Structure formats: C-alpha cells, structure tokens
Length: 208
Image 1 (spheres, one colour):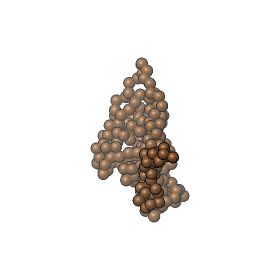
Image 2: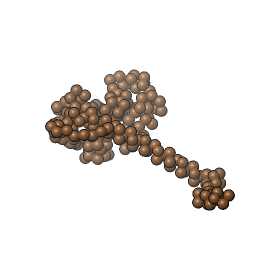
Image 3: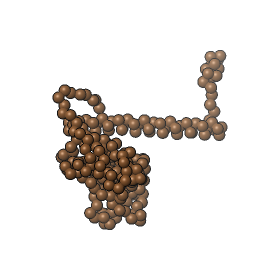
Image 4: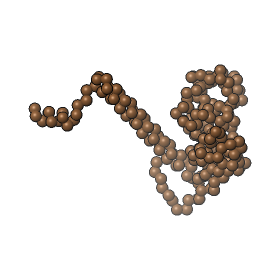
C-alpha cells in the first residue's frame, strides 16, 4: 500500500481514554463467555482464551461445538471482524480478530469500535496501545488510545494488513528453512545424505 501525505489534511484527534470513548459511543465493551470445560474440544467455533493473547498462533487450538454453545449460551454473541479481544491481567494484552465469528472466553473481553462513528480509532492501533499497558482491575478504563484522522483509517488498515501478510510469508519461509536445515543435519549425521564440498567437486570436474 502506498503512503502519501496531502496538504490540508485534518489533524488526528487527540488520544482519549477508553472510558471517554465508551461514553461518546465510539467504543462498546462486550463481555466474554464463561465456558464449561466439558464444552471444549477440537472442532467447531474457535475459542479465544486470555492466555492465547500471549501467542496468536495458539488461537484455534480450542473450539466449541456451535450448537452446544448456542444451546448453553443463547444470549452470547460471536466476535465481529475488527473486534479487539483483550485482557487486563496478569499483563495487559490484545489481539485483533480480523475474520470474526469466534467465541471469547471469560475473563477475556472485546472492545468493539462503532463502525458508523469510529472516532478515529483503528483496531490494530488500539491493540498495540493495550498490549503492555498498565494492568489490574478497572485500570483498563484509563487506558489511553491513539487515534487517526477519519480519512486515514481505511488506508492505514490496508497498509497494516499488507505488512502483516508479508510478515506471515517471511515467517513461513523461515519455518521451511529451519525444517530443511534439521532434515539436512539429520541426514548427514545418520549417513543417509552424503555432502560434497563444492570446491572439491568443481576441481574434480575440471580435471576430467
């Protein structure tokens, strides 16, 4: 995504506390659901626990059957794209659910930006401001969240998504290289693979 600046662009709104943004309707809080252990399994809707916010790669390992969840918790809703799932302890952490349709397990909660009146809030910026912020009961209402000019919300999200995708590609490539290195070492140490010094091989070919 290209990033350009233009003269006359309105300045970014000042950072504001979560409490202020809630009172102005730019945000709303959605409580997590208390899930019984017997509902959890490996198939169904993805469940996000507060502990998963330490490592987003863990998200998806725990699931709940959609019909059992609806039967046990008929009033509970699923996340929406752009929801910020957060926790307040033992450390403050947050993650943006880009896709939605997930179950948030208590004590994790959701900050949902009002689509029709976001007040300059960007989910990824909100999550970044929460992660590492002060933790403890009730302190989350005093968290200060940065904002951007309204016209910058969409292009900023697009640019951040592009960066995230590029980072994921690099991580996947690094994982493949690490796996290849492990296989190479295992083959060499077991005798299954014979490695030839490229300089020696080149000298041998030159003498033929």
